[in-house]
Length: 376
Image (cartoon, rainbow, N blue to C red; front, side, top):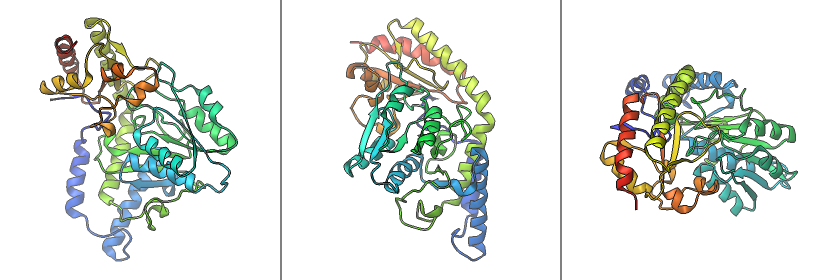
């Protein structure tokens, strides 16, 4: 099998798999309990929090463990807006191409009375800094802009927005799920108030994420309970928190070499496909992370091409995995000016550290055969 859907979830790293087997076999004790087993669990949880904080460049108290990157983003968006002290600030500024978890959260706030501004991207896939700045006004309570788009890989102006929002005392959240491990990604680069991460994009397990919550930024918890500073109630999964720490440490340690590796292979892939199949176009010409290639195949149904590739053992995607099962065209591609037909004719190829040149050759060969067969 050729797995080219790393944006949906990266293969579990062997060292993390080994950790989980051992941790689940030995785990005992609730980290909130005061007996010996509970104190041991608390020590492991605290150490995992300290390790994540060291990578991000923050204090351990600012690290909140969640069940996913989507939950982290939802706590950030819903929690920050609901906890605002100045109720006259009722505007939320975001983009039209956010991950469904953020779009769903702002839609919920809209139903609760918030004024939501969704800034559209330009045709190159990037939301312009100027358009976002123009949307920020004195009534803005929250701004949420992803660091890297999950469908096109286009880098968004999160760094600049974080600094502007800090100057204007607007809470700023960034979905950094697709940026971490692919860019130098820490709070030095994007000094956000809230930053969401996911383990399974980094070679960790599905089922754990992190929300960075800057000290002094109030959040209303979505799940009642004293755990995670009252931000997320429920007994913490200690083994998963440790896996998250391993994943972020590995991502930072290998980021430079892994990014160069996938960028080289992605560029070779695109050059070969564009040369072999005239008319194919990239979706997103603005600067991108190296892992992602989103291509439009004219006169081709993307779902049919995806299935044809799958039958040959090649795993790719039509867009965000969280939106799979829907026949609706990609909101990201529609947002940057593609028609519904063009969006339906597009596929996302997302590479990772395990991708090889032999896989590039195999995918190019398969597309060269299958695209003409599926036209019409």
